[in-house]
Length: 320
Image (cartoon, rainbow, N blue to C red; front, side, top):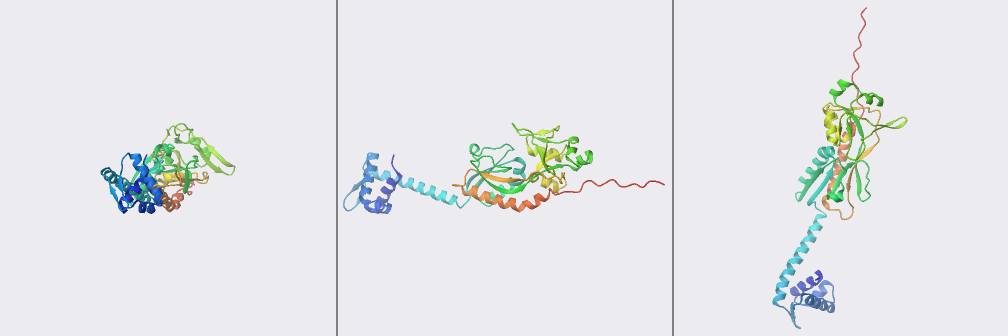
């Protein structure tokens, strides 16, 4: 196999007209340069240069080989420049993964804005509530809620999060407001159960410590956005990340419930395979996401603050 340095030596010798000068330019002694040129010609089985004390002359085979070598070295140089530029500029294909609700409301819009700012970039967003293997799926960056379990990955926290029980005003008007955890037994609770996993438990912080409720409702789904849609439609109560339902709460489509019983704190994380040799498209997008989520965090968390319950019925005076 011909070495790239031997090609470089050959092309440089033709350009300078001297094998010794070409060797010095590439850091070789005249003796090493001569040995390398002989090795190249031996490997190819042809003479490339006619050498004399005054000048070098290309043979016909050498002229053909020189043309191809020059093109190959130009391609290599262009590839190196492209990689170097890619460390400073987002270009190529960026593959992003996120849960459906979080992806539709937050990651997708952020990816579109990021792509608009980087014309050399193409962005592919894959939404799934299943845990995607970044290596198998060829994902550059994934956004997830909760702790990181894969030690092969690097994680960076984007924002704080928590879950909240919520229901639609129409449902609450029909079934009443839950005032305590025991009241959930009398309510239609929408259950999230991902494939191969137990139904998602509803965990709260109480004065006695953590208390876990395992609701068994009529409606079950493996998709977080369907759970949200059912809750907005008035089919029952949902236990959702505040990042998924903050917009619905602010718009009055959902009401946060049991807010005096906070849920364990969590976080939104962005994860990626490695810090080493991280392409600019991934590195810059991670920074962009961190700024975007940090800017939205106060307003989102505020949506989970305690709200007033339904008004008390009016007091009626007794007739005398």
